Length: 369
Image 1 (cartoon, one colour):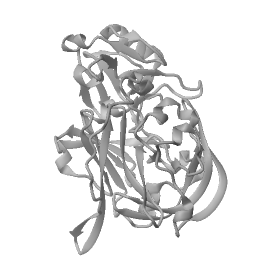
Image 2 (image 1 turned 60 degrees about the vertical axis):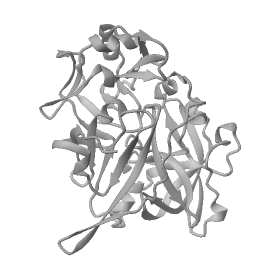
Image 3 (image 1 turned 90 degrees about the horizontal axis):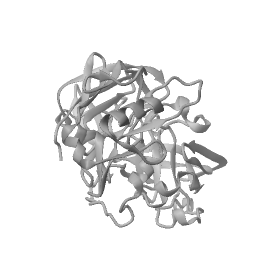
Image 4 (image 1 turned 30 degrees about the vertical axis):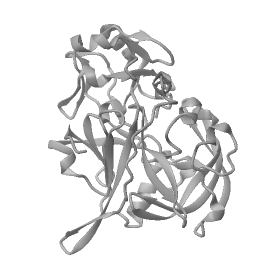
């Protein structure tokens, strides 16, 4: 997970811009099949500046509402605590366990580290509802110090993060929310899928417990996971205009990362070839006028090329300037070089996270909303 969020897309106009919010009553969809009732949850995903994609959950018997990033690159749930007194929490929804009759105290200190720094607080337990689906006895973090996320949290539209990766990378080895959905038989299928909006202010959808064929056309291409940590797959290559630009063979599908994150030197090569200029933290700006003359980028998975056009991998920031949708990332020497296939990719390709069969599915996106 990359939490620079391209410095929140260079923080251009982020304080004044507003997202169109549509009130939605989130209820589980019941579908009859062979005498059984399958529960599928649908959660509308909002898009803020193509940098943050978030939806609603509720916690506690009194249904306290939080806007969270549904993040396939981490595994814990955390929201701000009413005990958070920093300015960063001032405009956030804050969990108050004194108002919930289903709250169970824990109190163990909690800290999670992101690229930008630590977020810390303490653990609590309560019931959580996601997309109308109730999950009992979820251990999550009440955050009292979000300083590690920096400006991205303070001016961002989200209150917290709900991790959808595997328990193996969960801080304190806590069960994941989706894992509890499966074990508590809240959903019948161990599958969730993302349909992310392609334009800022648009609406997408997270499906929990299944997929929706209206969200894509053609067939799903499945590829097995190589590790049950992140949603990691074999990557056959990355090309720009048909020319290879990487030797990395690892890809991670990460809804919590706004951009395409790759090895620093590989991203430098791509930036040089398209005429982008370095700015900060491994990110690059580029003239918006170049888009019409640039080639497609392709990620090669399971024998197929999943392409992105220049209009898709170059982000227009408030009609002020453009940002290259790639960022260089530095990993510890013990880790293999990899590509984080973040929201720039997932906005264009319907992505199925199949926990039950330990695989990823990809298909061409259909217009839904």
